[in-house]
Length: 444
Image (cartoon, rainbow, N blue to C red):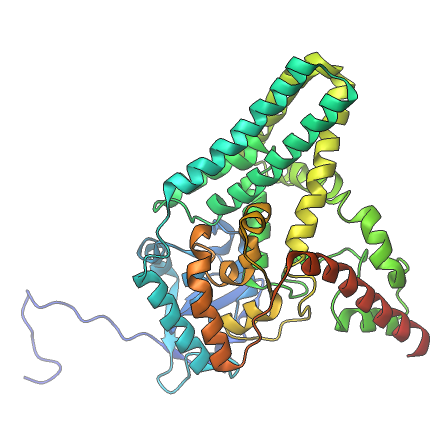
């Protein structure tokens, strides 16, 4: 029979062929009100669904009009589960003659990176050691108990108070690294358990918001060091970063602050104020504006526990001052560790690179040691963490040689530094950017 013949009642119906699109058309759908992206050569319209995306709508917006395959695989440990939500969003596929990568991104680098990821999966490097994370949580709780015991036994004099503050700042910093693990879904196979423990650690142990962290941090991972996409380089005119922004500010005669001195005033308004002032204000306002009552309840439980514990020793005002002093100390730790891997690297507008190249351009490593691993929450392996966000941190050192070899093959710089030099480079980078601003401000 011909095409129009009767195939019988029991014959399965053929699915209609999907519409095909060229990259030129897909790239036009990159507006807030019209967002298409490509995953595994399939085209999805995520415009209406983006508001329900657990990682926030901005992450999807940042990939509108692009191939998002490697980012999709990087952020989602259970791809089959996520694809169920993607089926209703499917609108077509790439035309057969179209390359899988947009904007002349390197197909060879992409292919080799995906082979590396497959090798890491075969080596079980995405499998978590639950005892490792349990011990991390136990040492945080032990520090919380030690802090209370110090004040209880030795009293609220200056020396016990200072010691207690440093112990609590350490526990807060370590809790920050631990919530980071659960937030990236790198501990349990089921996302639900990661989310529950994440809310407990960031909410009850730190007084912050899991959703605030997710929506902010995933943008940073998706497009690190990209202006208008990575919130970590949105400095609100307080600092100028990289090599292009300072020159642009200088040419436009923008002088919100004396940027040629930013490497000096960084010590006054950077590490001391980020957590106690900026983050705390942003967290509280985000929970209230978004009516995120679950996260707010977790945060309130932290403050209730803290004040019930320390008001008997310091009174209400004293406990408030004590809390802010702890966050002042923690803020220094957090800023120096998080900036040593990024602020010294390329910072610019969207260059549209492949996943491997984009992450390597924005990240560098710090040498491995037991102290460096603990001090930074294994973020001294920032390169590996950015390439594989869902990989448990205790496996970064195992995949690092494979990443280094791939970078050498394609001539991509793989930077690794001693800890002290990495911290010093933050100041050097700020000074370099400030000097570029001053030169452009005076002479261009």
